[in-house]
Image (cartoon, rainbow, N blue to C red; front, side, top):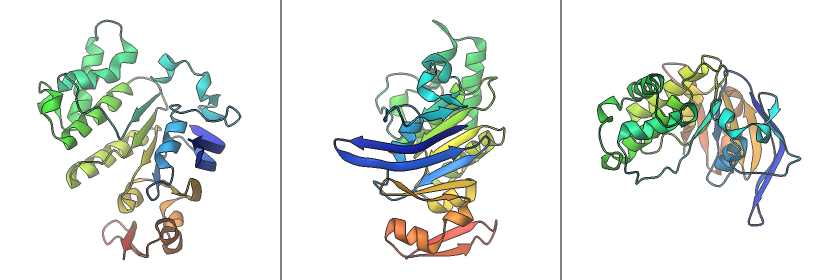
Length: 258
C-alpha cells in the first residue's frame, strides 16, 4: 500500500528522521509507537505527503510516487486524522463531518454525501450531536467528530483505501478508545490499510497486527506485536523498566511498566 526507503527529515537543522524504512501492506493495521520526540508524527506526516523530504527519498503509494498523484484524486484514496484539530469551528457538527466529502461534490452535497456523513456519525456515536454547534462539544466529542469526518471521506467505491491517524485516542474515555480502535480494525478487514500513532502500548498490542517502534528518529523494531514488544526493546526505547506477560482474556501481549 505505502512504502519508503531510507527516509530522512530535518527541521531547523535538527535531525528528526534518520534512515527509516517502511513497507505497509494491504489490510494491515500498523501502530507507530515510541517515546515523546521519537519522530512518530513526523514519519506519519511524511508518509501522508504533508511534509516533504529529499526528492530522492521517494514515498510510494500504490506503486506510484505519492507526490505524482493529483491532490483531488489522492484525497479519495487516503485521509488523515491529525492530533491537532481546530478547536473553534463555527459550524454544526454535521457540517464539520461533511468536510470529509468535499472531494466528491461541487457547490452542494448529494444524497450520497449526506448518507456517508450519517453513516460515519452513527459509527462514531455522535449522530445525536448532528445539529449541535461544534464549539459546544467537549474535547473528546470533538475528537469523534473529526474521526467521523475522515471515515466519511473514505466512504467510497475505491478499493484499497489508506487511513492515517495521529494519536486518535486523545481526550477519549476508555469505552470510546476501544470503539475507535474497533472501527479502525474493521476498516482494515476490508483490505484497507491504517497507519496509526499510538501511545498506549497495550492497546497497540491488542489491535494492531504490525508495530513500528521508534527511538530518536530511527526504527528500533518493526514486525508483529509479539516480536517487537520485548522487555529489552521497550525498556531501551522508553528508558524505563517493564515486564511482558499474556493478557488473561485474549492472550495478547501485555506490558507492565515499573
